[in-house]
Every structure is written in structure tokens, then in C-alpha cells.
Image (cartoon, rainbow, N blue to C red; front, side, top):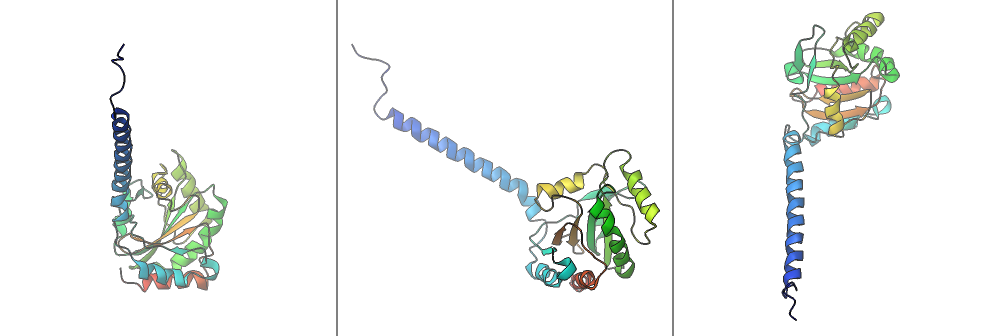
Length: 220
């Protein structure tokens, strides 16, 4: 008796081929989706290897943890709020090289770092450079906690900027730029990343000043 359900010669090979091609096609599609999803971020700024190397060379001693990057990441669209709750972004500071410090009032290393940042800002803030602290105390009372900390310590030069949604720092985590607080970005006048520091540093030292001088000596 003839088995009408028996596979035709070569049918199994064709099925295996189709399955293989389907898996390969899916892998290519996923890879393309991931690449396209990151391409906008990766190409937001030009690669600036020389500028990053100049910052990296200046980062010694107390600033040895600062790493020159300049890989093309940009933060012009990174948003936060001012003390009155108005929306701002890094693009609003275009033309100024920035030391962007992410901090929170509950973060002990952040609190310890703030006096040095305030002293550095007092010396170097200008039309071409600014220390820009962004507070990340979350929730409805987050900004109030940050304001109290700044007021209690009577910092002369550190303004209140905040993102109580934590979205700005989530962006850094998603791009594997930083994982904890404090964290600092060194940006050029176009909001393009030149260096990253994970953790605190003693900025009010000759080592910290050398980094700022190297940054402000670069053309934006």
C-alpha cells in the first residue's frame, strides 16, 4: 500500500533551507533595527579624537578618572528645568563648553563634591565655559530638596537645574555612559561629548583647573 503522506525527495532539505533563511533574515532585521535606533545618537556629533585626547592628556592626578571619549555622542537635546520650572536643554547653552555634573541630595559623594565644583565655577564660569549641575532628586519634592541643599550651603555660583523625572540620566545609562552618581560630562560648545567621569573628583585643584584650561583652549 502506497503511503500518500510520505515526504517527497528533497522536501526536508527545502524546509531546512527555508527555516535557515528565515532565521538569518530575522537576525539581519533585528541588527538593522538596533543599528538604526542608535544611528541618530551615534551621528549627532562628529568624532573628535584629537579634542578628546587633549582632555584625556590633561586629566591626571585628582582627575585621573576622567576619560576622553569624543566618539560622536551629543546632548544638545537633553532636557531639564531651571529653578522656576521652565524647560531648558543643553542647546540653550550653545557656544559654551560645559562641565555637566549630575547629582542628588541623597548622594553623599555628590554632596562632598559640590564645594569644589562651586569654587571651580567661581574661577572659570564665563561666556565660553560653565559648570552646569543637574539635580536628579526624583518626585514632586525632588526640586525642593535640591533647593534646600543649595541654600543651606550658600554656594556662590551653582544654580539650580533639575530633572526630577530622572529621564536625563536614564539616557546616559541606556548609552552605557554612566551607571551611578555623581557623573560628569565634558561637552564642547555644541553639546558634543569630549570626556566622561564616573564618580566624584576634587575639581578645585590644579588638576581640575588643567582640565578646564584644556577644554577652553579647544575650538568649539
